[in-house]
Length: 96
Image (tube, rainbow, N blue to C red; front, side):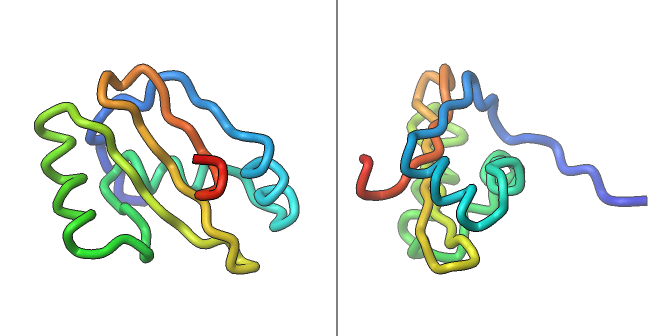
């Protein structure tokens, strides 16, 4: 039986920018895999130690949470959950 990991915070409304949507489609993937990683504390392989610690603190204090991932073709995508947990956006760094 697969392990069930409890979400660390609410995602709120889910939003995907046009650039991220195109990149996900080009890589034949969706955002679900990355959302699951984001909400369970897997901030991605791109973030530095300090940014990871900031996310840990943000979960506890209610601040903005940022995860960064690479798609199969190397394209970077970010997931940002707002401090008030009203929304989570999947975007390219250039769309920030």
